[in-house]
Image (cartoon, rainbow, N blue to C red; front, side, top):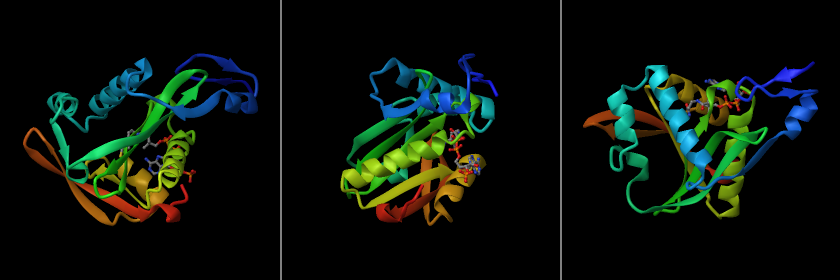
Length: 187
Ligand SMILES: CC(C)(COP(=O)(O)OP(=O)(O)OC[C@H]1O[C@@H](n2cnc3c(N)ncnc32)[C@H](O)[C@@H]1OP(=O)(O)O)[C@@H](O)C(=O)NCCC(=O)NCCS
């Protein structure tokens, strides 16, 4: 059956051909596509009604979004994106905190491309990168006010076993976290 991708408007012949148009690759923060992902994520946050405009703007301001799980020194280990027909439609970052724990951040799939398995593939790639980097423990957090994100991580990783806090515009927003041995994660 012909498939049409809503975002690209490109036509494919068969599902297997479509699969060949999809790939996961590394992405760098300097890429134009990275900025496009940030803009799309911001638009999604506003459209979802989960955050006010002031909160979304604060989140993009250096120091405007402080999270308890990323304080202190840390370094970006790797970042991946998913491309569909040469257009970047999703991403994930892997950070390493000063205590050696890996933290998954900024998982995002553009709305027209959600529920197609890309989120899971990005998590799988980031976990593989954590293993390659010798990271033994990985954490990921979702804001309590984002029920869909919480449900997604619960589906992939089981029951949350950590608590966290994010501070935006002076408000302390609760978050839940998953801390797991990298070897035990089968995303
Ligand atoms: C959360 C998000 C990354 C999921 O990406 P996705 O590509 O739609 O997810 P996938 O299609 O890979 O789904 C993988 C599995 O999770 C399940 N899943 C996806 N979204 C889910 C949800 N909201 N609740 C429960 N399960 C969900 C899928 O059914 C699928 O299950 P299966 O493989 O066992 O059949 C995406 O919806 C998104 O970017 N949302 C907005 C930003 C966000 O919330 N990011 C996370 C911040 S912590």
